[in-house]
Image (tube, rainbow, N blue to C red):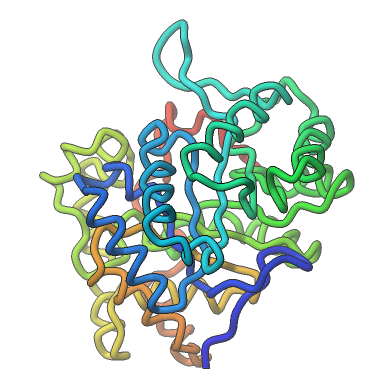
Amino acid sequence: MMKLRELGRGGPMVHPIGIGAMSFSNFYGATTEVESHAILDAAKEAGVTHIDTANVYGMGTSETVIGTYLKATPAGRDHFTIATKGSITRNPDGPGNIFDNSAKHLRFELENSLKRLGVDAVDLYYVHRRDSAIPIEEVTETLADLVKSGKTKAIGYSEIAPTSLRRAHAVYPVAAVQSEYSLSTRSPEMGLTQTCAELGVALVAFSPVGRSLLTDNPLSFDAVQDLPFLANNPRFMQPNYSANISAVAPFQTLASDLGLSAAGLAIAWLLAQGKNVIPIPGTRSVSHLAELLQAAERSLKPDELKAIEEALPIGWAHGDRYSVAQWNGPERYC
C-alpha cells in the first residue's frame, strides 16, 4: 500500500511522487496547455498531490499553465500542494543568468508567481540558486519573513551543500532541499541525503529519470539537438551519448523482468533511498505519467536493489551532469 511522505518535518503529507512542471514550458520538447492540463487531471485522479514549478520555467509559462488549470478546476487548489522558486534572473548586461537573493527580489518574484498561479500563497518557496554575496543566514531570515507574511507556508533551497543547509536550518526550519538525484547522479549521497534525513528535511529529487536516459525510450540524439540545454550537456554529447545509451540497456532489461517500465524502476529505486525522498519527474504525456507512478505501489526487495546496483553501478554515467557553463549556480561539495 502506498504511503504518503512528509514535505518537511511537520509539513503536509504528500504522494511519494510529485510533478516537476518544467516540462510544461517546452524545456524538453514542445507541449501545449491542453496537454499539461490533461497531465494535471490524470495526476489528480491518481492521487498525486505535489506540483513543483519556478518563475523561470518558460519565463512564467509553467506557473501560468498551472494557474489556468486551478482557475478551471477550483478543487485542484485544495488537492495540490504547490512549490515554486525564485532568485534566478536574466543578466541584463549579457548572456546567461544571475542570482539575486536580496529580500527585495525574492518578495517581488514571489508576488509575481502568486499572480500567475492565481493563489494567495504557495505551500513551499525555494531559493532556486544561492547568491554567494549574501550570507545564507540573511537569506533565510528573508524567507522566514515571507512565511510570517502569509505568502508561503514553508521554505526551501535548491542545489545547496550540506553545510549551507545546516547554516540555514539553524536560523529557520528548512522544509525541503531540491537536488538532482537519480541512478545517474549519485552525488547527494556524499552528505546531502544524510544531512536531510538528520534534520527532517525533505529531499526533493529532480531529474529522477536522468533527463530520459533512465527510461525505455531515451530522447534520440537528433531530438537532443533541438533542445539547447541537453545539446550542450556532456552526457548528451557524443561519444558520451552513445555510451550512455548502451550502458542503460541492462537496466531496461531488468525493469522489464521485474514487470516495470525503466522509468518506474528508476523512481522505485529513489523511493527506497529514504522515507524523506520525494522524486518530481516531469512529463509531457499522460501515458508516461502512468509509467512513472508505477513506482508508488512497488517496494523493492533487497535482491532487487542489488540487481539494480549491478546493472547501473555508481559512477556508470559517461560525462559530467553539467557543462562548465551549466555548473554556474549549484554549490559543489564533493
